[in-house]
Image 1: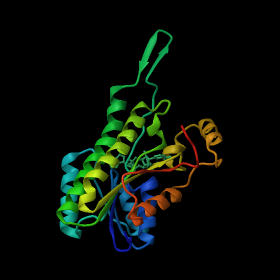
Image 2: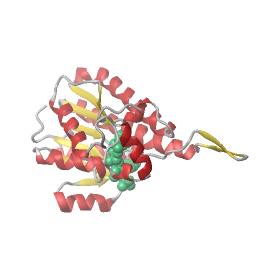
Image 3: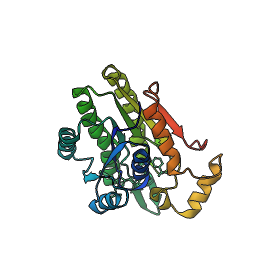
Image 4: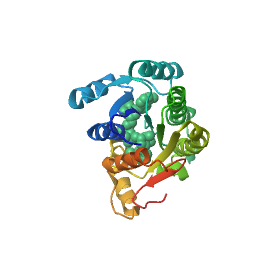
Length: 247
Ligand code: NDP
């Protein structure tokens, strides 16, 4: 698909990797629009880059449904959705400390599943419904993760990102008849604020396991986004962009 002039909605697009996608897509002639949870980050993006957005919590069905309807009524249906919003709430599954048994909490499980899995489901469903209804040739890109294979301390996150990969394949099979392609990207460790929260000694250990010897850059994931949009034969697959790192 030619990117110029295309309407691209990016969830979690006011910060981090999503912001980079929005800025890069605008540079090559697309019309990005971001959804995020903090108005101040959206305002900053608008002020600095002239990219608009709206506060929409991807976990809230009614907000997501009304957003996609209002956006389409005003601008036309989205051509591309990038399901990027995601969070972590890491913790060990069970751990005995002295006499105390520590368990991964239900709230840590649920909040990660809500944003990373339910949010992707809801935004994907509503974007696809508008694309199908208006018969546009669409693309949906879901951001999974290297952790989808199962990672230490990331029961919730790994499960959510594996679910994202599976939904990608299901949607690609179902939506091909409507001219909609669906792909995913599984980034390795990328130089973002999410990764900056990790202790530096842990980052050094991680970097030592990455064959290219460094973290990835957000622009390198943006390149993958661009490839998936432009290559009409890419469908139902997860592109791994991880410097050769295997968890
Ligand atoms: P960031 O935390 O930097 O950005 C995520 C954005 O999503 C933030 O703006 C955040 O808002 C927003 N967000 C959180 N919850 C919601 C919600 N309910 N509705 C709408 N927006 C929400 O993350 P990254 O840029 O690092 O990661 C982007 C994606 O890439 C995620 O899906 C992540 O899992 C995935 N990924 C990241 C990797 C990395 O190395 N960073 C590696 C592999 C995958 P707020 O400002 O409130 O936090």
